[in-house]
Length: 583
Image 1: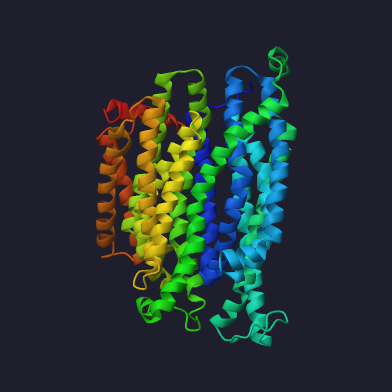
Image 2 (image 1 turned 45 degrees about the vertical axis):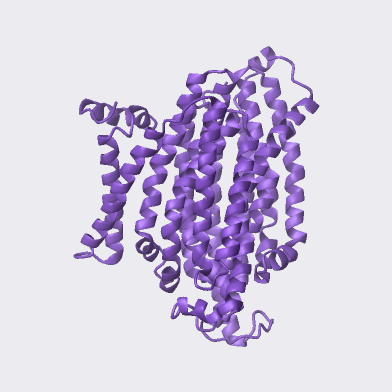
């Protein structure tokens, strides 16, 4: 095999670095996007994206994991002819599922937006996003293959390329459409000849343009997925997969296509359903939040309006209020909430081939070491980040959304709860990768369905209460993921016949995270004496990072192995080892 093959820690570092870059770029996209199109436009944008996610998941989620696991096992056993045949089969599967997914989204756009989500303004954005299902399916075939070969570079590079193209194209299209559309509407009282029947003054013009601007933003996403697919295809054609002719010659004969396809389907279906159930929580929010908020408004609209007095656009009617509140929720707190899991859970993604290889070789000690490392590294990242989002919710939102301060007032209480939820979401995602790696693909499905049922119940009951409405939504997610994490840890202990080191995985990071959060709040209050609000926020975040890092070193929460993951980390490790801060 090529020297490009990486071990688990190297793979985790590569994917983590890529995830950090991608999420920073993604924030550069979504944060100004929210500032440009506001809660109303982001409601349409996120409706389309949330419709897209389960369709994309059905088309892609199970097969890449199955491919990665089968390829990893075959490489461990030296069955390189099987490796190549698995890739060929997966490409055919993705071609079929990707085409079907795009067609369903295209021809079902009106039904999905209007009937399922009760948000007809999102129809054009759904249509614009439909080709992305096909493009991402084809890209996922290559990513799953390279992941199984433990070469994370192609996946990382393609993700960064996608993110950059999305920002450049998406923001450019959105700005052009928004400015051009508002000018046209204010001039003629219509949007390109279409009379929308609302006032042409101020924000009313922006409201008229919002569905088109959201579709333009989605267009950037669609084009970025096409470019990512083209990169992966070109990389494979030019660089190959690292399997040599000698390895193919010495390998046993490949298994029949039917046998490999049957194994692929057997593994991929439960994994696909488990991943889909993860995304179902977002779909539950999309479908249930707007319908239950509508019920709350019909029940007592004066109470709902009283909660947000002075915070709603003057021309916003009761009919548009659910989409507006959903747009604020999904555009601000959910955007920040999603940053942390995307980075922290890369350890779970990178762990899958390593855990699968250890499971195949029946190396119990290696399995326990891998599981403890994955979970510990996940919580080391997730706990301080989640606590920081919670205690500095309003301050961070104000820093990032200076043009939407009224929406910040609505979003801040939501983010306080979602910051705590981050810890459980990250842990669950890594647990699911571990369970998939040890052949327990079905368990995450059952756990996620149980959690989703709890979330749906909370949304249905409490969001419909006028005095709670959208503010109840984060509590459903919190309860959902606490329940799932408890079941995950119990299942890993039982299935792998180990005991997860709860003290190292949870207790130490929780202690350091609590000190970090307290320090952040105190630093913000102290910084406000001589700094502006935004500079105080940056100062508080910096102090929190220092407090957390020093605390983790003092309580031996970070090991020498952790530093060896990073470039030139051995030099830092030697210094810290000399002063007995690591071991």
